[in-house]
Length: 312
Image (cartoon, rainbow, N blue to C red; front, side, top):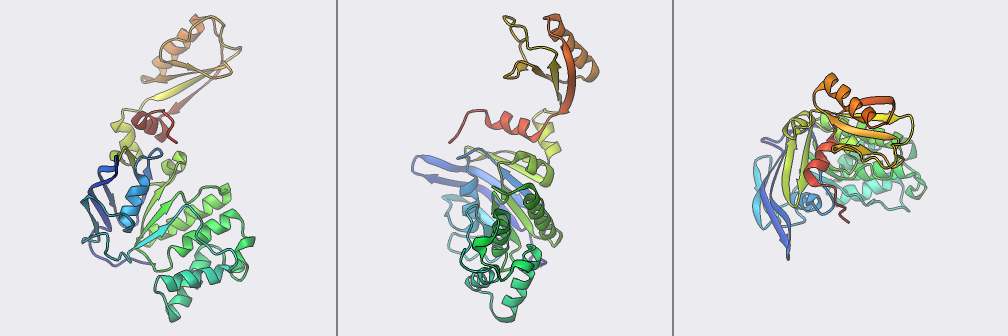
C-alpha cells in the first residue's frame, strides 16, 4: 500500500463543536503527516471521539476546518482517503473472515479483481490467511480485532483512524497489531489512534496529542512533552525494612504506599537530591532497605495536565 496524494495528509484547524450546553471541541487543532503514528490521548469526555468523528465526516463542526491532502472538506464531502476502525467490533460472526472482507469491500466500492486482491492482501497482512474460511464466531478476541482493523483498510485509505485498537487483547495480539500498524507507516499511511494505554503510546507513537475539555493541552514527541511540562526530573522509590512508623507524618512532597512500606518522592538534582531525601526518611526513624530511581513518564505528564479526578 502506498500513498500518492499531494499535500499534508490531515490538518484540523480550530475545530469547534457544541452539543447543547456541552462544548465538545473548543478550538482544537491536529496535524498528521505521512507515515506517522499519532496518539490522541485524553480523559473520558475530553473530546477525542468528537474529533475522530469530525475527521471521518460523521459530525459537522460548528466552525474550524478540516483539510485532507490540501483539500478542505465539509461534513457532506466523501472522504475516500480515510479508513475508520471503531472500538466496537464491526464483524459478522456467522461469516468467514474472507466473506467479511468481501462484504465490507463491496460496501467501500471495491469490486472485481481489485476486491480479490485486497482481500488476499488483508488476510496476509492480518495473519489470518490460514483461517480465511473459518467462521468468525470461532475466532479469539485478538483475531477478531485484527480482522476488524483489516476491514477498515479494504479501500486502501491513506489515513487510518483507530479507536482503542488493542482493547481487550492479549500481549501477543497487541504486539502483532502494532507490527501491522508499523507496516502501514512504512508504506506512507498516516495513523491516528486513541488509547488509554499510556505506556503503549509512550513506546509506539512518534507524536502524542493530549486533549482535555475540547482543547489541545499538549502536543509533540515524548521528549518535547516532558520538557514542556518540566517533568525531566526523576522519581525516587525507597523500600523500607519495616512499615512507616505509626504516628509520624510523611514529609511534605513525599508519598507513602498503601502498605506503608514504600516512600516515593521527586528528585531533580541527581545524587545530592537522592542522599538528602534518604536522610530525611531515616531522620524520622525509618530504615531504607532498597531504592530505585525512575525517569518521568507520559503518565506523569498526562496526570499533570488533566488532573486526577475520576471522569465516568
